[in-house]
Length: 152
Image (cartoon, rainbow, N blue to C red):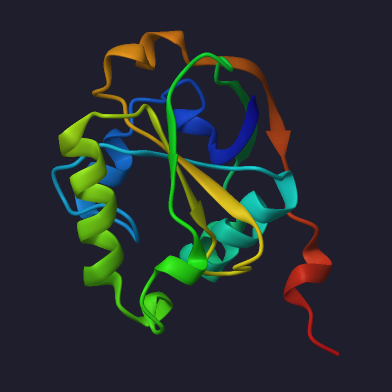
């Protein structure tokens, strides 16, 4: 399976999940490492746009294409199985993702995107024994189209 990630170019070779562990994010609490990826490049871009400051858009970014072998274990969380207001309750999603990482039952957790609930993000647990099989397949500069920031 190929998944995608947009990262600050300074960290284009880092798939350790350390960045997410510093402050936590939607699906993990601080101290829990997690690698956030998406099924589509466009979803990566949208996820970045809702999570960065407008001043950060001018930073240098890289698009990573990441190979996750088809043989690894994947768990999933269906949007209809989540409580109704899950998008507004980060404590709830923090708990789900953090428990997933702590349990180490699967390498990957497929979750609905809070931006577009019909599309999916793939959360990868760097502490899982199969994480060594996850590889960056390609990396190239990524520039956000400036029209995304002009409202007419």
